[in-house]
Length: 203
Image 1 (cartoon, rainbow, N blue to C red):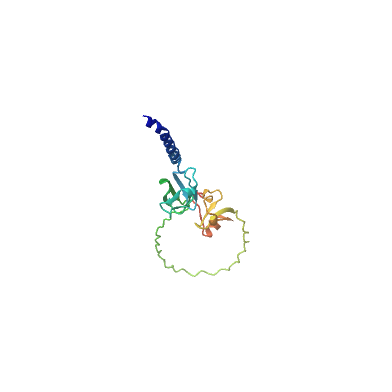
Image 2 (spheres, helix red, strand yellow; image 1 turned 135 degrees about the horizontal axis):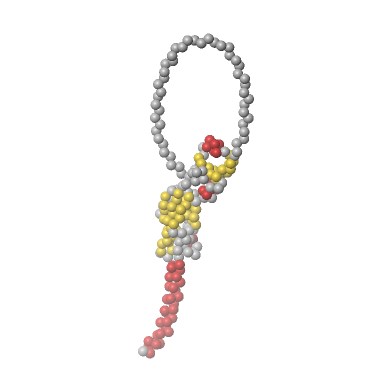
């Protein structure tokens, strides 16, 4: 009994040491959580993912499909093309995920239908009697209309997708700066330049 009491202080010290070492790790692991479980991104947009209060470089980041969404070493996701990819952060052998869906609102669904041309029958001209020529009167020249200046609008161009947007379009904020251009023009001129209107802001 005396031996047990003599060892009691030592056992208490060992217990306190174990609690002080493992308790913070358990508390920290329980507090860790991805700041987003799911996210929807436009093509060319980015998203910063975080794992609790940790610095992004403390975790190991990976993507299930880098062609859809790639992720940097610090947790920044870059949307590449339409599809779904799972972004995983690994810390202390535990994995935390975020499902990222990439969409392209500027993509047009083109449906082509074959046009069948039906030849029209040509009718032989009916012979008519030759009319008596009458004196021709010179037409009075009509003044040419003065072209009026068309109202122009400021558009935001995406030189990568060949789309043009209104300045208030939400897709403009997600557009890469290298692909963005501003042009004051008319709707008809934009079409003639080979650009097509954004389906989101031109409804």
